[in-house]
Length: 113
Image 1 (tube, rainbow, N blue to C red):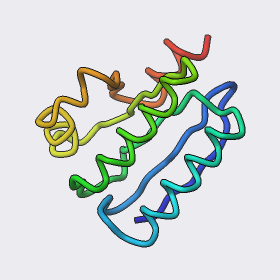
Image 2 (cartoon, rainbow, N blue to C red):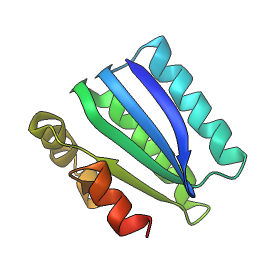
Image 3 (cartoon, one colour):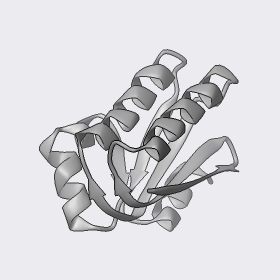
Image 4 (cartoon, rainbow, N blue to C red):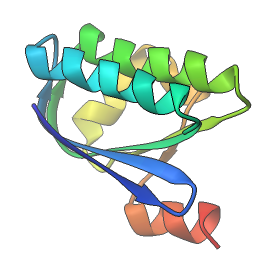
């Protein structure tokens, strides 16, 4: 898994690529997200467009982020194009807690006027 984090207005965008599963990279990402939350970043967009595979340990990253940001009235969103990744998110019911956008442009149009 590879990732890149950047700011887009008041959102922290986390672009993920490859297989999101339990690895050193996923542990580092989770720690970095927690540091950002502690520093006052409470709105996140996870861009999963280039994710090929997602397992339960990957999903735990999103759940942990959601839990931590909600304590600060934050928001978490997904951008997902791939139906397989979307199916996994929907299977565990995460789509009921985190809104899914089909593209980054769609997210920007609605959330970053």
